[in-house]
Length: 87
Image (tube, rainbow, N blue to C red; front, side, top):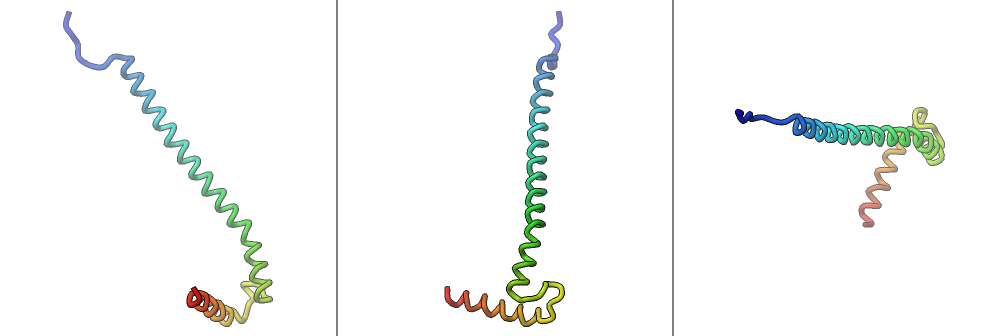
């Protein structure tokens, strides 16, 4: 009998199973990353209302309708600079 070189069916099957497990793990990881991004975006979207109310409480105007926005921004920059100097 001649000795044949090559892989057996069992060796090929094991390699295919290993490749399948690796691909499954990578795809599951991608799914978890995408899910976390969606949850983060949903949380940020829910916080928009809180940010608008905070702006309205502080400056007594809605963000898009504030005619004195330049004055408010200058005041905020001065406050930030004062905080940096105190530290």
